[in-house]
Length: 357
Image 1: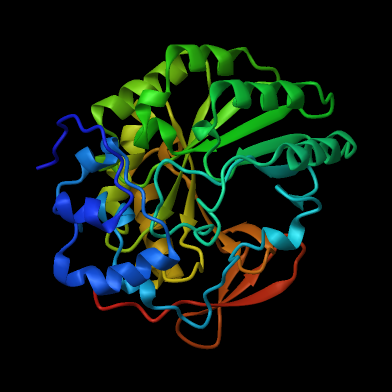
Image 2: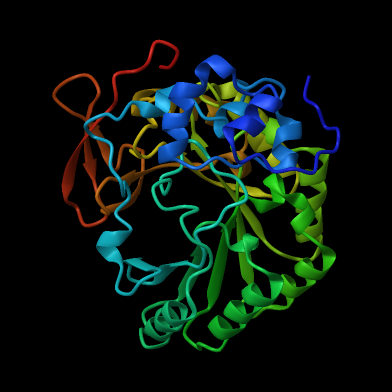
């Protein structure tokens, strides 16, 4: 049973995890090697949501020796952020929008993160780099939307976040701001009424995209934080990652999408797990993901159905995993993926682990 008793300490070391019963002492040699490569961080809220280390919340945050396996197709920068970076801290992949990597800090470190190589290595974007990024946006009229991510922008101080949002609001051709975050779920205490008021007063309007993968993450505190945001008029979408052994069954997906919709959060994206190093144990096959989406559409209304998407490795952009963009290749697990420019790319599904599909 999930333990919602109050906790106050964020877990960042193997000693912390062992003391909480989340890892075993005999696993320490392998987990030390994992921790040397990829950072650990579990908030009190998420520790309270974990019933067992391998449950749908624990598996997202507790390190696993399987992370030491790097497959040949896995990449340091799986979605090609660096290939489309005109200045530090900015990714300009699509003509009308940019990603502003405003910080490299998160409140939790997900074991499947596609930016796991860099997240946590530093804090907020240095002032000179922030100035250069905002200057680029201001002098590029094609940019209509700015997506704040990182890291997690809601780990910034309210003063710092407000400053960035106000400076973006002064750029006349920017008419939408998106803020991608896990904070309302993993650290709901950050979602204060004052923060909600600040965000709701910003112009252009701030849209919030909430990352959550399983209904077990939606604790009473998380639900209350989401309600505070929506009650202040902040439009909310969700994005999730399809993860083997966590949500790669239609019952879990249906429960999550129904819960989000009830919370007034529109399901937006279901991401196929990216080719980050050490994440193959989380990755399903495209065929399995498409089968799940077919069954989900049979069960729920369109308001609850996210778009199942793949970020084509190497920075080629995001495509919907439907018949318009995806065709079977010459052998099992081989796919021909058509990007937004009509170019075709090969994609190989991993050989599934015994416990995955």
